[in-house]
Length: 340
Image (cartoon, rainbow, N blue to C red; front, side):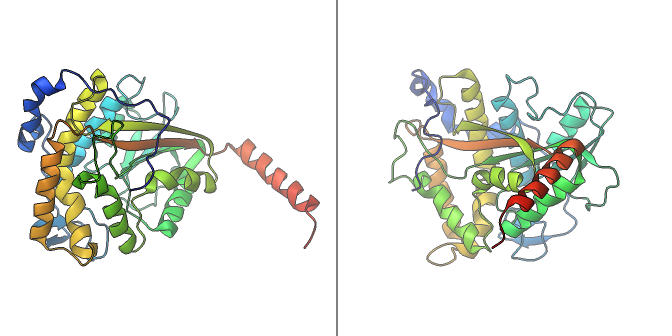
């Protein structure tokens, strides 16, 4: 297992009363889902595989399904992120885009819950999503990405960030929120004998065999955003409990939702990657289901205090004045550098 990230962050304190009420941990996933908005969807195009619908036509395209079950998981995940930043002035994003943005682009937030919430917050703004072609005539004030891990290879990501840079107004902002698919614990209650212990590294390996579409986007996005030319870069890190075991009230609520998020999303996360790129050879559908049953049992275990890290990065496109100053600086640098 990789070295634990965020080692300098404050450990999450376990609620001492949790064990006395942990029977709620065994609530079936559908009971959690009933507390959320169930999103019905009709996918006109795509392919069926192992009982799941994928929006992509080719079988080597994006690994995640695009069906009602996964959209429901997206909705629960959206609420997780809102809870994590509940104490912030704006829990939807951190970029300081002002009070009157005109055009906002949403990339990768599933059925569009984030876009709908932002449109309600800024009724005079036009909020688009990535499903449209990049042919907008008006530049954007803000571009937001979330949970896009595994969507592109390095060249694809470079193109996406460059397109985002080109599509933004000078002074406009980009923001991205991504999860670390690996799972950790501060109190060592997650042990090497647990299936959850190697969960993330196994899927990172699958994604790299699936055409170098790494699931470690949370580690690379800041550097890639800076490389595209963005400045004034900020980053915040999170620990999201997998279950309501944390003492902190906000983390307890986030963990409760994240437990539901995992239960709704598990099969969608695992099925394609393991049946196409599992080791030592591709798994069968039945093998995946047996494995996920073990994962669900561990998620319900109140003695495993596991969490999933996440990163949020936001950065600004330079103003015209800043771009001009940068160009002048580069010209001077070229003049003074000796020829080789």
